[in-house]
Image (cartoon, rainbow, N blue to C red; front, side, top):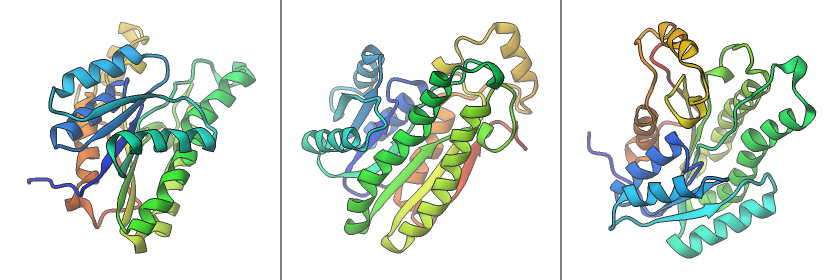
Length: 248
C-alpha cells in the first residue's frame, strides 16, 4: 500500500527518544516537515535531524512543560518555522522508578504531569485549529501497561490508561470535523527507556513475549505512520497494540 499525506507539518514530541526519532524519520522521508521536541538530550534530537538527510525539513525545540501557555508557544514556534501543523504525535514520557508504596510525591506528580497533563495541554492547543480546518491527525503513543496491570508501573500505567480514555472521547468530539484521534500502545520496545534494565531482566521479558523478541522503534513508528496517512481517514478512537502478542 502506498501511503499519502495531506499538506501540513507534523509535531512529534519526544523526538530525542527511540520511538519519536523513528516516527520523525519516517515522516521526513515522506516529505512531511517535522518539528521534534526534546527535554534534556538535544544531542539525540539533533542526531534525528542528521539521520533525516539534507533534503528533509526537520526543526528541534526544547519542551518539558505541562503548562498550556508553553504548549501554545511551542506550536507557534513550529508553525513559524514549518508552516501549519496538521499532525500531532505524542511520544514523550518518563518511566516510574519506585514501587508505589515508596514513591516520593515529586516522582508520581512528575509522571502525571509529563505523561498525561502535558499531552492534554498540547492537544488542547492544536485541536481547535484542526477542527476549524476540517482536517488533522492526532496519535498518542501510550503503553500496554495502560491496558493491563504490571507491577512497578502503577502511576505510569494510570497516565497511559488516562490517555486511552482521552483518545476515545476526543475522537468522538472531532469525528464530524474529519480530525482523527488514535493511540498506539507499544509493549516492551528496545529504546533508551529500557536501557537501564539489567540483562537478566531483559531476557525474562523476552521470554514472556510470544514473538520472542523486544520490539523496535520502527515497529511502532510504521503503525503511527499509517494512522497519520490519508488511507486511515476512517480510523478513529482506537488503540492499536504493538507488543508482539504480550498483552493478548
